[in-house]
Image (cartoon, rainbow over all chains, first blue to last red; front, side):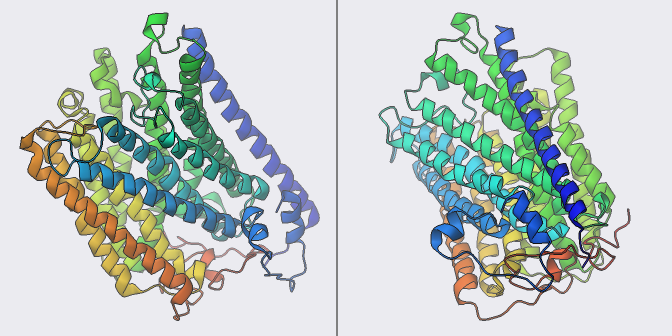
Length: 42
Length: 544
C-alpha cells in the first residue's frame, strides 16, 4: 500500500472536477449544436 | 460519499477499515454513495427490466407463433415491439454495463470509489422514474409508443398525448447515462492507483473508458432529436414535418448518428469482459493487449462515420452509398483483430470450461455470426433486398443477445463469487449455459431464412409460407425466456444459500487488482492505493 498525501488528494480532487466540467460542457455543446442544426436547417 | 468524503476516507488510518454498512434500508440503498451498492442497484434494476422487456418479447413471439391475428391487436403489437426495444436497450443492457462499471472499475484500478459518488447515486435513481414514466404510457388512452424504437416521424408524431412522457423518459435516461459517463471518465483518468499507466489498465477498464466517451458524444444528439420531435408534436414547429418545410429524413440522419454508436456502447464493454475471462481460463496472457486497445478505439471512431448504412433505402447520392458501405466494411478489420486475438489467447492454453468461459466462447462464435450478417447488410445494393426484413432482426439480435447479453452473463458468473463471497452452482450454471445457447439459436437463426424469404419486420401477421420458421423461432423464444429463470435461481442460490466460500483469487488463472481483495470485496476497498507491479497488473505479460 502507498499513502497519498493531503496535497495529492487536493490536486486529485481538482483534476476530477476539471474533468467533469469539461465533459459536461462537451455534452451540452453537442446537444445545443444538434438542436441548432435543426433550427438553422429550416 | 462526496468527493470530500472520498478524500477524507483516503486519509483514514490504515487500521481503520470501517467496513460497516449504513444501517436501515433507506440509508443503505436510497442514499447510498458506495460504488458497490450502486452497482448492485443497477444490476438488480437491469435484471428486472430484462424480464419486463422479455415478457414483451414473449407476447411478440406468441403472436407470431402462427399466421393470422392470434392474441393481440396490431396496434398493441406495435407498442410491444417498440417498448421491448426501448426497455432492452436503455433499461436492461446499458444499465447492466453501468452496474458492472460501478462494481468493477474502482476495484480494477485500485480506487476507493467512483470519483463523484453523489452524482453516481443520482445517475441511478433517475432511472426507475424514467422507466415508470415510459411504462405508464401503456395504460394511457393513446397507448405506448408504437412507431418503433427509432421513433421515425411522421409516424411517431401521429401518437397521442403519451408521446410527451416517452420523450421525457428518454431525456431522463440520457441524463443518467451522461452523468454516469462523466463519472466513469473522471474516475479512470484521475483515480488510478499511483503507477498504473493507461496501457496497464485491464481491458474492461479500457473498453468502458472508450464507451463513456461515445456516450458523452451521442446521448445529447438523441436528446436534441427527441426534443425536436416534442416541439413538432406539441408546439407546432416543423423540424421534421414536410408540410411545414421540414425534412423527415433529417431525423433519420440525426437518430442514426446517435443510434449506430449506441450499438457499440452496448458491445464494447462486452469485448472488455470477454478479454478478461478468456485469458483467465486459458491460463495465458491476453494475446496482443495493445492491439486490443487500439482496435477498440478504432471501432469507436468508425462508429461515428457509418450511420447512413441504416438508410440505404431512403436514397442518397452514389458517392454517399459507396462511402458508408466501405466505411462500414472497414469496421470488420479491428473487429477481426479482436476475434483473432481471443482465439490466439486460447491457442495452446491450458483451457478449462467453467461457466464464464463457456459463455465467453459462445460469445466469440455467435457474435461473429452477427458480425458477418452485418457485413452482408453493409453491401448497399444487397441491403435494398434485406432492409426491414427479419434478416435485420436476426442480425442485430445475434449481436445483442448471444453478444452483449451472453457477455453480461459471462461477467456475472465470473465476478459473482467476488461480489457475494460464495461460489455459484457450477452444475446449474452449465445447465443455464446450454439451455440458453441451444434456445437462442433456435430463436434467432431461422429468422435469417425468414428475412431472406422476404418476411418484413414489425408485423403481427404474415403469409403462410413463413409459418414453419416462425413456429420454430417462437419455440426457441419460449425456451430462452424460461432458461433465464435458471439464471435467476443460480444467482439467488449463490447470494443466499451457497455454502461454498470463495477465495480471494476465485479463479486459478485470474490476474488483476480486484483479485487481491478478499471475497466478498469489503464495503470500502483500497482505502490506501495498492502498489502496482507485475503481479497486480491484469495483462502484465501481454506483448505490447
